Image 1 (cartoon, rainbow, N blue to C red):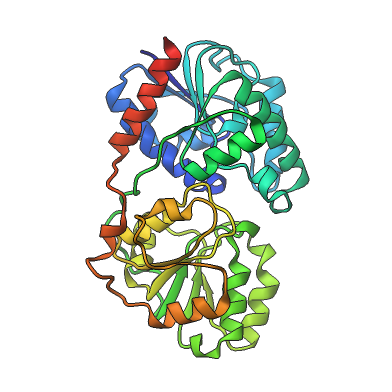
Image 2 (cartoon, rainbow, N blue to C red; image 1 turned 180 degrees about the vertical axis):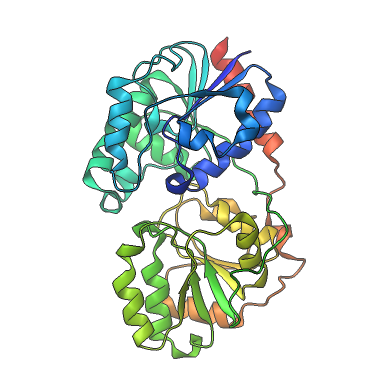
Length: 352
C-alpha cells in the first residue's frame, strides 16, 4: 500500500493537539508503510528534517499569523498545486483542509465540530469555510475522529458515522525547569481560544482570595490579545498570572512536573491530549466535564467537575499532589502504535 499524508496547511503554531497527533502518527506510519509520502508546505517541512526522504513540498497553504487562516486555505482549494495527489490512499489529518482537486479513496480526521457547537469561538470567515469544507469532505472521504463525543456531534451536524480511534499520551522528554516559577502555581497549557475558558480561572481566583498563594501559569502561545485586558485587571487586584509564551517540550514537561496541579476548564474539547500529558508527568489535573474530556481518562478519575468556581477552588486547595496509585493509573492503556494500526485498518478498508 502507498500512503499519502496530505497536510499542506499544517502549521504547528496554530493547529494545537491535532498537529501533535499527526506528528506522532506519521512517525508510526513511516515505520509501518515504507511507501509513505507527506505533503507539507516548505515552512513546516523544515521543522521535520528526519522526514526529508518522504516529504513532497507544496508551495501553497501557509498562513502567517497576520493573515486569516481561511484565506490561505481558500487559496489552496482554488489554486491547488500540481504536486498534490489526485488518486491513491490518502489521509487528511485535518478534515477541513481536504484539497478540492483530490479524487480517490481517502480518510479524513475531524476532531470537533466547533463551527456548529460554539460558532462564536471562531472568526466568521473560518466558521463559514469549515462548514462548507467539512460538508464536502464527509461526502468524499471516510471520517475518523478521536472520541465518542465527537462521533455523536459529527453525526448530528453532517449525517455521517465516523470511526472512533482514540489517541495515546504524548511522550515528553526529561523536564527542563527553565520556565518554572519559584512560587507554587497552577498550570493551564492552552492557546487563548475562547472555548479554552481562561476567564473562568481568572474569575475563580478573583472570587476566592484563599487561592492567591498560588500563581496561575498560562502558556497562551497565540491569541494573547484576547485576554490581555482581563489578565491586567486581575493582576491589579492581586492575582499573580504568569504568561510563558511558547515553550519547548522539555519546558512543558518541567511545568507539569513542578505544578501544584494542572487545570482544564474547557467549554469544549474533541479529545484533550494535554490532560494525558499532565498525568504522564505525574501532575494531577482538575478538568471540566465538557465535551470529550471524561473519555480522556479512566472512568474512576476523581477530579472531573462542573464549571462552578467554589467547587474548583475547593478542589485546587485540597488537591493531593500524589493521587492514590499515582497519576499514570488513570491513563487508558494505549500507544501510538495502537493508534497507527487502527488507522491502517481503516486505510486498507478504503483501499479495497
